[in-house]
Image 1 (cartoon, rainbow, N blue to C red):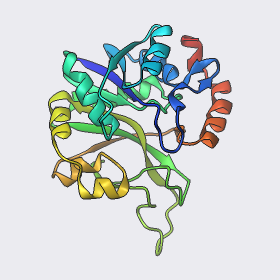
Image 2 (spheres, rainbow, N blue to C red):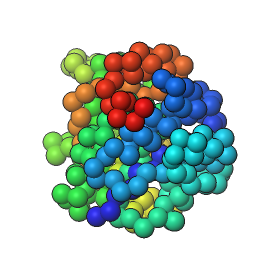
Image 3 (cartoon, rainbow, N blue to C red):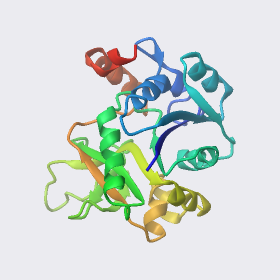
Image 4 (cartoon, rainbow, N blue to C red):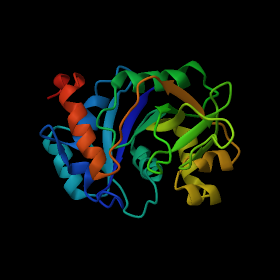
Length: 245
């Protein structure tokens, strides 16, 4: 099964406009994501899918490949569904452009989940979080076979009666079988997806399974300027960057 990586990126983030091009250790954030994704053993090619000429120019300057898409997409997944029309592949890995510390081995583990079980049409990485009452993180609850039961920006499961020591959060790297991705993009947005502002709820609301791959290490996404400060500090200690800087 041929897997490709697609990194959706746009300049108009509501919480942090222009964040794909903020510099971390001398590189735009989206370029860190690109270079780290290119280190994966199980990915054939990586592209940045964007509607921004500014992002495309920056990526190309550092040797990356881009696919220009429409400005009308409501979600990153809809954006990569358009971009993948031009690519011959079986699996599509959506690697969010605000994950500059993404680890190649985690992406490879996610791809392995679908390759090992072709019945899995969609899978995502998740990790433990100890941040409670934080609406910037998308929390997930898992069944005993690691299928995802629900996602929310609220704390789930509730600790109103039994205290939860930790929660699981969505680590924004997901994989689709290409045919399922195209089906996903054909569905209209669903009620819970709109309420929670989590596009993957569209899958559950249409009656399909989502499989979680649990990663032990916590990951920090850049959703806000404060997150960027944290990531800058973490990147100073990161060793993967020396493989591409």
